[in-house]
Length: 334
Ligand SMILES: NC(=O)c1ccc[n+]([C@@H]2O[C@H](COP(=O)([O-])OP(=O)(O)OC[C@H]3O[C@@H](n4cnc5c(N)ncnc54)[C@H](O)[C@@H]3O)[C@@H](O)[C@H]2O)c1
Image (cartoon, rainbow, N blue to C red; front, top):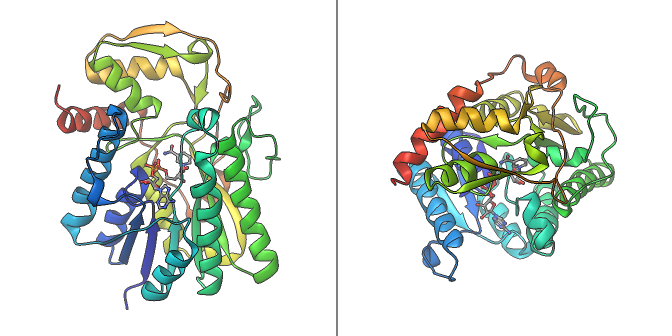
């Protein structure tokens, strides 16, 4: 019998790709997201909002509808709706990716993060307990490591000094999962993602944000004078790791967290150089001071991940950004 996987946040970057991949491997997928087709191009007077809605719409069409993957629109902060969805689908595996993402956004509007990242997470965790889901994987983040320069970041390191409210919600998720294991033996695995990029990616994150600006000949601001270093992970590598963790049933073993990132940070100025070569556009750069919530470095130790799943692919920045640039030019012709 096909194993049933519920993926939350499936109109998002990682979720949409994961749904297509697991579906191709023979899992039965239900994808859910707060995204609602009824107001797909509802204009709230914000061009960023419109383009984000279009991207979510296109991801669902491209990765889900084309493959006849079931989709449900739901707000995960609604406890009753979450329980009803679990009751009718009865998932074997839950991959919870839905969240309000974005470190900088959480400085401007921290309250936007409470509904999805705290209430939504608690509801999904509670449903996993009620329906005795044996495999619960959820998205955490490299941001839980806070501001530090000693690297690489290991899962055993202390994570209690977040630099942003977003990071605080991800630490809270890990702690909630720990408490549910202590109280009810609900197993879980938190996936600490490190700056995932690639085709169909997030328009608010540096790779696509910078690529869009370069194409419009707009100035790119490099905070921290461009000296910040980030451990970028190509989306295909991330999907490989999540899939192996599911196939091996790692999340059944108890309560745990694991880094999903390579120990290969790159300075933002070098990253911009590669991106500009991929696009064939000379960037206009302005160096700017570090912003509140910025951290100087992210750098994953992937020892634990490799111990769990064995070797995993490491797409080079050049190959990954070439793929991303090709997709962007096709998706959004100049
Ligand atoms: N992309 C990265 O580099 C990265 C890095 C670290 C952690 N993460 C985490 O990984 C997960 C997936 O990231 P992504 O880049 O695909 O993000 P994304 O923003 O593209 O996708 C998240 C999806 O969650 C949905 N969502 C938000 N609130 C919801 C709610 N209340 N009910 C139902 N759906 C809701 C959104 O509509 C969106 O489609 C997130 O939890 C994010 O915080 C991502």
